[in-house]
Amino acid sequence: MRIDERDLERARSAWRWRGQARPGFAVEPGPGQESVWDYPRPPAYVPDSRPVEIYAGDTLLARSNRAVRVLETGSPPTFYLPPDAWIMALLTPSHRHTFCEWKGRADYFHVLVDDGGGQGRIDDAIWCYPDARDDAAVIAGWLACYPSRLRCFVDGEAVRAQAGGYYGGWITGEVIGPFKGEPGTGHW
Image (cartoon, rainbow, N blue to C red; front, side):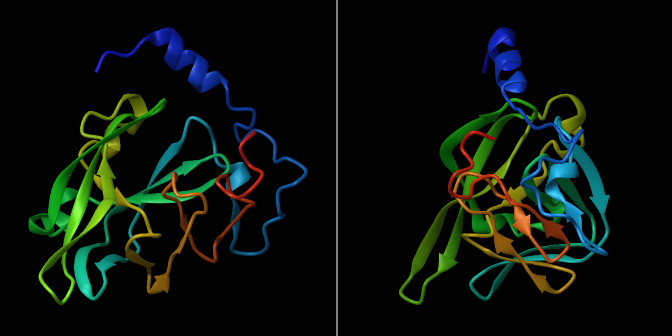
């Protein structure tokens, strides 16, 4: 995929909020909480050693104590796990691809599940950046998923999905917003 550097720079500069100052509409964090409005843009890539588990129904897809949280202004963290944390036999490549101005091209995967009547599939539930760019190189080949399509847990806490369907942020009790993807946030 050829990247036009001018288009890339336009996409990067389009974001109004970059984590340098919390906007007036942001919720003030309490003890033990962090505001997504304090996260930077470009994103930070932070190792996290808490146990992370991901399920398709009752089937364990991934488990690791070695995750990377991607922290980007206005969005709940996205957790990336190394390939060896996943049961890769349950994943099949999708034809879907997206592009992030910070990470590069994302490839998607469907999850194969036993739906009781044979083999079912959860479409485009997982993605990775095989050739992640710049600072994102620490997650190159690591996989993330939509908690709206799979059941995700961080240190035993059930994750709530980020609204909107496009972003894959993981909402836990430690993060507060409001979060991009919610109604009325298209201008962020």
